[in-house]
Image (cartoon, rainbow, N blue to C red; front, side, top):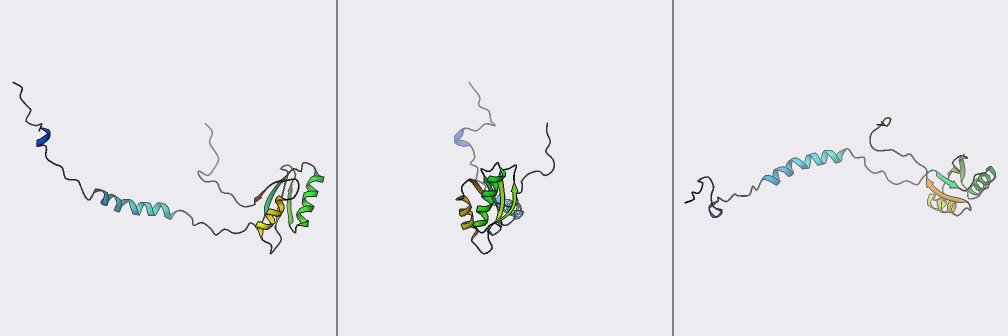
Length: 134
């Protein structure tokens, strides 16, 4: 005869366990303030302002080609701020009072222009300081 162990109950005689109603509620009360603190450090997105300058990349490896594109920019009312000879490009400012998007489209139509990008400050995210190589 096989004896059953007294500490083991048969499946039909196991006591029912009541679900804990306050577990998720208590967790959410603790998690929501922490989530709000994490989101509070994020900077507010700035209103999108038109760019004050553009970087124009062009097919201009010679000074004559760069001068030709600089003249075309000036004919469209723009101001050449800087010529990047080694990078084959120019920094240009749109004419005062003219729509920057319209000026950007006009720059793209100049023969020899490869790309037009708004000039601005870029910020890397992550660690600051020199990179460590292993």
